Image 1 (cartoon, rainbow, N blue to C red):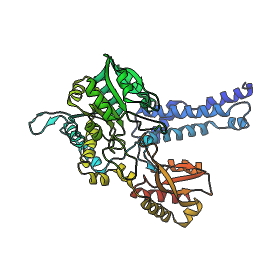
Image 2: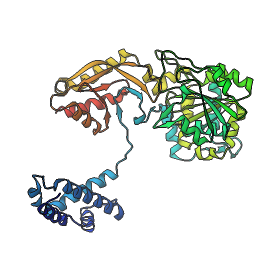
Image 3: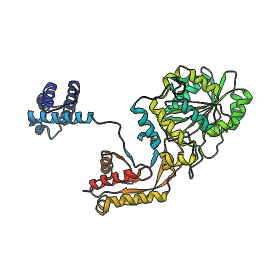
Image 4: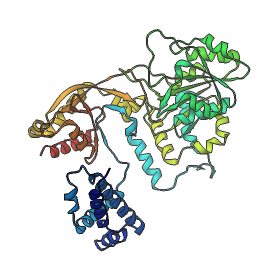
Length: 480
């Protein structure tokens, strides 16, 4: 319990805290222009709240600083609150979503926005954002046009599908497809493919929201085509295959191929849906084979879904390709209005897809494909370049070394793939590795690294050429 003396000290300190109106007036007198009265008052209330909480934490009967805190002057507390409010107002004018340097070695880092966009995609974004566009206007006919028609045409051309559409993410694409193809009916799926997509979004949950009834077949490690066949009833509306993008079952395993599933579909007249997850359109040398939409369409799968912002290397989107019968039904569904893409995402996605018309150009122009295919020798040279930028003094103070390391694809893609890489590792003499990692996160621009064995690891795989100079300047500043 708090002693009477401590409560008295606490009460006296709280009385010294200024009123909101007083500090708002001082902010205006100090030239706090560009902020509304509401914004000023909100900043002051937050500043007062922060200081009240600090006093509460310090003012307990065990605190050795209680008497010292009691000696704080009224003017001191008012100045502290004023300065805190000014910092809050400054922070309010800064963007919360900002560019960071990814030094983790994880290419498709979900927390860092996954795939960086290509230069062509960024140019397309900028051009469409600056003014008006023909989003739903046919320039040839001079009348209302169809949103996303160019993207849909590109997707059909690239995958060989009869029809295509795009929605805001792949989870939405999967739910929308199941809802359209099997609402209030049974959907058969292998137990080994009941994946969690990420952020606790699971195939069974998505299926439940779509209105379909889940029918599990086979076992976790083995499912055969007769498991599907034996489960088909008059209430079965769909055969679902989900690519286990973010995990692998190894050892004594067996799964049904898309060719087998397509054969069963034709035999029983039950349509098929395959969720590819990451959505690769090209194979990358040195990495495991990733199933593509082209392969699924060629195998006869009716509807295929995949992401736009993972291995495809574009903006966040859910892509649906397949038989016109089903895709056209989805386009006419009321949910399409809710899930449709905005003009900026369409612009970036179209530019990304156009790069794939020339596979060599795609490998050279799309950052995700570039980073995944960068050779280890080049990464070593980049690490050495960063060391040279730091100089002898900074390298000594920060304990910098060039070392081999291993990165990941990320984004739930290719979970077993390891990306051999090079990093500059830091074992600072003047502060801890954790302290340095925190300093890097608070730098301008922020640098997101990882710690391993009490070393800060700066993996070069995801660091762009122009960012190496920025990183060198930041590290030199820390070494002063």
